[in-house]
Length: 153
Image (cartoon, rainbow, N blue to C red; front, side):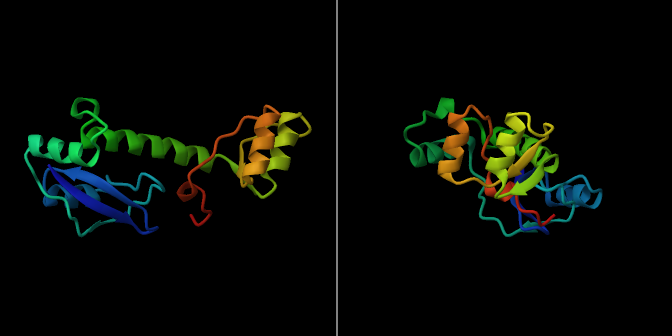
């Protein structure tokens, strides 16, 4: 397998595993490769620093960079990438199905929680203090990573 560093037109970087460079080209040309963050089908290869090493050498190298994690406990690189892509795809779908209320997030979350307005999925910004106050009131919410929330696409 070959690991390619990939980039979409929105600047999201991710990795892809392919049997060969020709297989990457075939899948890209057939629109089978999409950015896991924004679903962009315009994906290009970036220069890569990945080096093919024997499986034992790769595990030894990883153990050196993370000595607190035993080699048997770490997933293979491809496994963690698959989980990350799946999680990113789910988060991307959540973001797409929410209304961005911006800085009004604490106010709107309270209005929804106290049934002052119909329930709906929202996202926005809250300071740490505002987030703590919402949590203290029993209002459930989850922070989103910043790269999932720009309204550029």
